[in-house]
Amino acid sequence: MATMRCNSLFSSVALTSFMLAGIAPVAEAASTEDSEIRLLRAEMSQMRRDMQQQIVTLKHQLAKSDATTKGRVGQAASHGRNTMHVADGNYDPNVQFGEQEPLKKIAPLSGVGTPPSDRGDTMSWKDFKAATAQDEEVRIGGMIVGFPKGRFTVSSEDGAYGFSVGLAFHEDFGGFLGGGHRSGNTANGDFGGFTENARRIRIPFTFRYKDWVANVTPDLGAGGADGNSTDQGLYEANLNYTGLRNTILTVGYFQPRVTEEDSESSNDFEMMERPAITDAVRKIAAGDARFSFGGLHYEKRWWIASYFTGQTYGDRKSNSSGVGDLNSQTGATFRAAGRPYVSKDIDVHVGISAISAFKVAETCTSATNSASCSRSYKFSQSPEVNLTSTNLVSATIGNASSVWSAGPELGFRWKKMVLKGEYYNIGVNRGNQAITNVSDAVSQKTVHMQGYYGSANYTLFGKGREYNIKEGAFGAPGVEHEFDPARGYWGALEITGRYSVTDFSDVSADIRGGRQTVWSGGINWYPNRHFRVMLDFNHFIVSRTATGGGMSASAWNSAGRDGNSFAARVQAAF
View 1: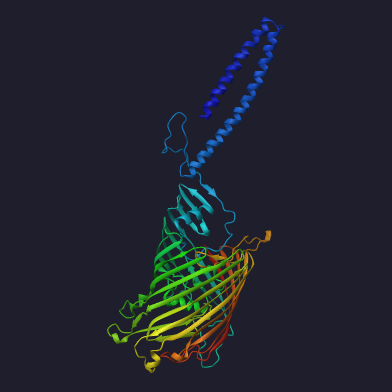
View 2 (view 1 turned 90 degrees about the horizontal axis):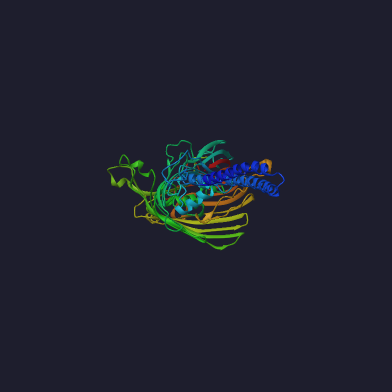
């Protein structure tokens, strides 16, 4: 339309110029001295100047009109169509001209922030659309390709459909120094001077339709030895509904959140491994790839979650020949946490976690003899570094009908410093089945074990650890400037220390699984939000395991051990 108006105006101007040009010779022929003719000449000259100015003005208006038209076409392309209007006809939305050019939005600070989670990112539809709008993206044909929260994602324009794929890669290497036993009769165990291990190779796949989210995360690591056939091949496979405010309902193989350390993503850990006591507690009825049904809810000041749980993925494989687990374990978890005081520089965290295996799995050594079936539970923990297959504290408790644990969580943040700790008591209730060579009175007695830890963390440069309300726990430090030495940017750096005690002995119940104390120190460097390098040093002191309660002494720790480990981890998180 603007082009047609400009053409009409140019025609009028040309016609006027032609008429004026024809009048000039006639006026000169009549009388060159006539004052009216001179006046007419002056007026014609002024008109020519005015018309020239109008022509310049029209050219500017035409250029501006063309720019506006291109902008509208680009806007239509961002909605999936590249359209144009026809001046003398009706607009048909099905008519398209040319090919659409991708609309790009670049996030200049895409490597700034905290690491992505090691799990499928279960966000509500509202949060997913907000995350997509904030991060780097390319829009092509009505689809959005981008990296919301640092994870590759493809979604429809309205965010109703979405697919994302991530990575949590942890490669450990290092060894043990002076990890010798206290007696010449004890086996050496797996404490080499140098070794390596693919600790985690998780590839989270997330499929979304509005508030329905499915997560499937295979794990090619998940063990203490590369390629071990007993390592699990699955971290999670679950269905989630996020349509309720700040609530996630879950069913399927999942990691139920219990204890503060277990609620954190492994990409956020202060040390390479969890404290031994929290790892022992989570294994009772939670842990990785545990069948779960339940949910969590969070607000800015409080967090709560509870799950009914069953077996862990792969537990039934030993029963394929009719021998093995005949009755799977059932249990439940509960965790509640709050922040009674919050300010810019201070966070106070308090919480409680409880877990129980209502029914311990029953195992049988014969497919036809019911007398061969029994229920027992085994506790076993490494010296808080997964570069060994030898566990120095271990207790197998027979005649176990149920297992439970409960304890408090405490945390405190002041600016860039974070202090936290947890204590847990573990109880094993006995049944009525007698145990060979142990008096009935002892075999029926409830077993009590315990453990605790305290840790301190300080961020030297970068953004200090902050509270993650969706996890009810403290997150990783934030990278404020990506690693760029030329500009004086070094990412984020933190130092951390921890004291941990795990005691699997209860002399009154004739259980002597050993007591393990670990002093740890470490330093973690984040060049950007996607990569991390960790260095950990552990000094462990372990008392001996002994025969009692129907269990035999450990071949690795019949006399106790003191030792040290030095390990490093390279981490990639997307």
